[in-house]
Length: 272
Image (cartoon, rainbow, N blue to C red):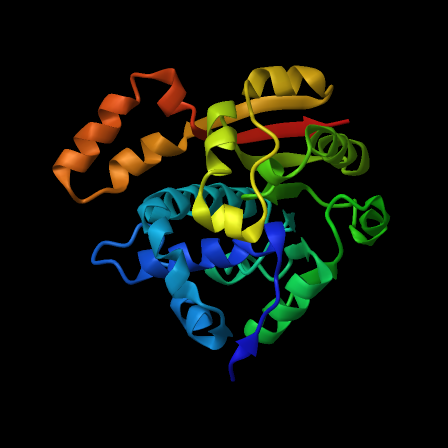
């Protein structure tokens, strides 16, 4: 059954991410190898061909997702009864990709129309709950249990929010949850500026707003937050390309901070 969609602005970008994960899954040497992405692309009534110019970002999106999968799997292995709180989940298949114990829990949060589409497209496993709301609305937090160690994931989310909302959301995580980890990606300021020139972003009337200038400075702004890991997505990409010349070129770019920090994945520990 084909699903019609009417997603605008930042909501439409989840289709861009899905498209790139599908491109990766069809590659000769996939980085992520999402087994669900291509099937969803085929079921959604949307002109994905107009996103063809984005294909150059396939390795970036796939590398980002694979690293977050690695952190998620490690967290659930260390905390079999833990909770994964997935903010801005979009159409990501992570709760289907990551093995977890029956005693764990998972909560996906996104806009109502996104969650409705997600429920129609995925047969989500037991232990996965969905909350249909904006992640910036504080009202939904009373649906989140506080008796578990929690991993809060925000993939491809914070850069679309105004800085004040990013800081409010981080403070809410720290205040509401007793302890756990917070993992997300952030872009450099120059990337936020350039992204708005991307035709697909202009067509969707959206773009990046917040930039991650210093992971440690962010921790210093939020008492209770401690930086435990920082990974360059460009560095991850340099390991994923099968072409030796492409790998060498990307590794050369890592010598320049502007490129090395173009997009970073960070993981923080928090506790009261």
